[in-house]
Amino acid sequence: MARKNLTPTKKELAQYKALNDLGMTANAIAVRAKRDPKTVRKYLRSEVYQDPEIMQMVDIIKQKEIQDLYLLGAKARKRLHELLDEGKTKTIETVALMDRSFQQRRLLEGQSTENITRVHADLAVIRQIMSEKRLMKNDIKD
Image (tube, rainbow, N blue to C red; front, side):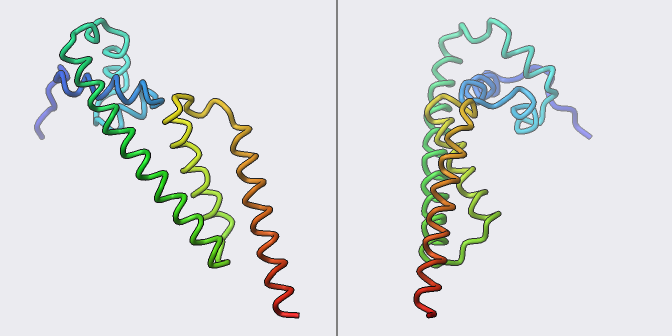
């Protein structure tokens, strides 16, 4: 079994920094990069990020990650609307989609998962919509 090079490349270092800046923990980055979490933490704390070339790569990676988050958030919201419009909402799927969309929005805002109050507000709106749809279905049946 080939052993991965112990020293991360500049591109890897830029990925560590970009993902960390977007709210990922060192452990999550390590899993994604298939590296030891200690290695990731070591480099996140190091002075390698004073290298202008690495910082330029960090900016490019962050832009790409943010574009992906926008796309995923849009897909999650679209699916959530489809479920609500079809009246086929399943609580777990609905909450999971809403949570995914919420987390992505928080990452884009640079606030990660700091404010859970928004989740509760979004859940209340979804519950209200689901309740109204059930009432409308019952009215139609009667």
